[in-house]
Length: 442
Image (tube, rainbow, N blue to C red; front, side, top):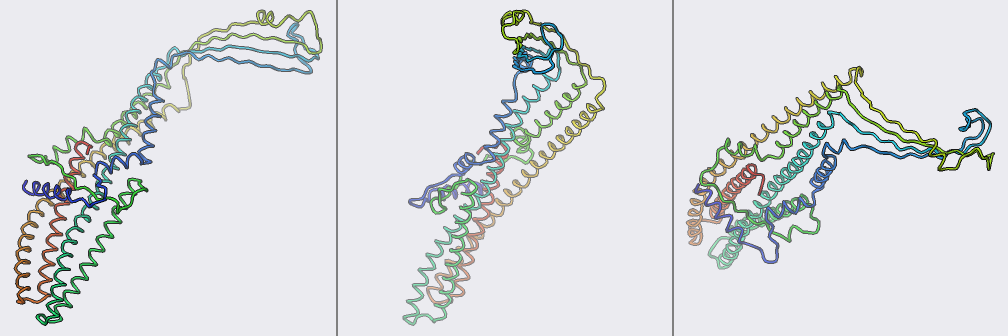
């Protein structure tokens, strides 16, 4: 646990070093900003709305349907005279009106479909959360990658400032004849190499922060406009085991929830296909009437007025319909079998998601433990390298050792600091990922 405490102190100190004029971005801000502009996340939100629109109470399926139809026609030539029902050569205008109503009395698929649609809403929500979780983990990875380069650059800048001081000092020493010119050449080479390394790290940091901005879909910011805040997480007194983390993750993992809902939807699909072989009962009612007018017999007294014709020609039609599937070419049986295959596929997908989750936790836990162990060792090594460099620098100032020996000692200290930073960042990265995989919250 001492490495965790040291890590928290380090990250806290790093978080206090803010470059004047630059905005400080935290990991939570990066994730929140990115989700607002993520096209995939927005599409999943729309899919949730679509599923909610499709889902409705099964009682609504039993509401009657009512339609009104009207036809206005001209019949010219050999036609049936509505007054005599005889075929005549005439021109007849006719208007037909009808109101039709129907209602389903019994259909077991109505309730099954409603239940399936309700589960589909939950699945769409879980899919949306799964996209957010996948995106968040991508941001975590990119954020930590850029954070490492940012803190590495700080070490290199401090070392470069030291190199500048030493180069100026050696230059004066050579000018006064106290040191050979070879020491100046060695120091100039070391100075140039450190300057190049620092430039490479700065360029690498710029590109990594640019990638982070692209991941966040932010085009109005420049990598030089912000710095990354070191995230400080409170480590538990007793780190959880892989099994304990996995047990918590099983109840929170959105991808696992989505896979479980897919299995439930597949089960309802089987019931829906089986219900197609069951009878359905419906009732219907129709009211109709018509009006006609011979166009070549204006003023014919035998043709009644409009409203009288509608009253005389009205017709009511009411009935029940029972539909019993007898043979449908084995289509229902084939659809049931296909639905069963889909159920098995969803079960395999569910188990696959569980396995992916367990493996991800195992990998991050291994990285965390290895990072902590390595950081402990690197802390000791850095202490030795620091003492060695202090001694060598004193000897170099006294002229006991040459510039090559001094540079080698300095590089040892620099490499020890690099390795220590990398181990601490690796442990912090894995710890953040493990905490996120437990609750899927930052």
